[in-house]
Amino acid sequence: MALPLPKPKALLADKGYDGDRLREDLLMRGILPIIPPRSNRKAPVHPDYRRYRDRNRIERMFGKLKQQRRIATRYDKTALSFESFLNLAAARLWLKSFVNGG
Picture 1 (cartoon, rainbow, N blue to C red):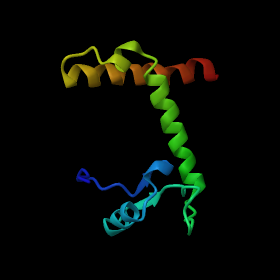
Picture 2 (tube, rainbow, N blue to C red):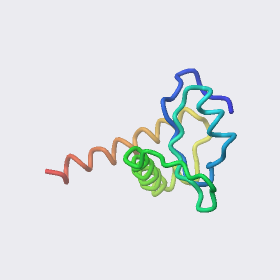
Picture 3 (spheres, rainbow, N blue to C red):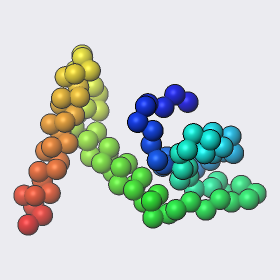
């Protein structure tokens, strides 16, 4: 698993990534695994569920961004134009909270 240079402090993942080898590898790299245990795990490891809730917020944000057809189908040919439109879509969602949040 090749991680970028700014090393994350924690990894939020779902039950599909629950495995001893992955957990050990993350801990050896200094990354805290926040992964709920699978139902068939013999010795369940209990993650910090308060931090795990952030994963749901991230998933919902990606769901809202993918409602933009251009992002979901990736019409843009270059990475720069795709990232630029992604920034515009994120700003549009962010501004809605100010307009309707009052």
